[in-house]
Image: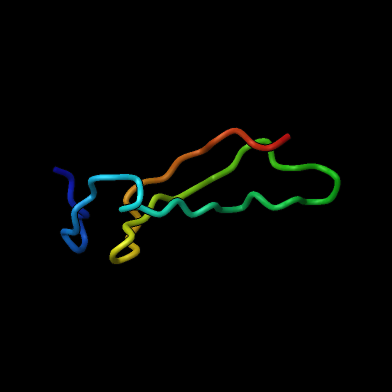
Length: 57
């Protein structure tokens, strides 16, 4: 079983974490080609991962 390193809360399914979208707003006529996100613990809000995903064109 996986646990949050901050609060020791159990992370067993997708609802146990929160995906926080960062900096994917429109800027002028162009959208960002990438979306940045942070994965946070649903219990305490500690960041436990991050990543980059393809943008919305």
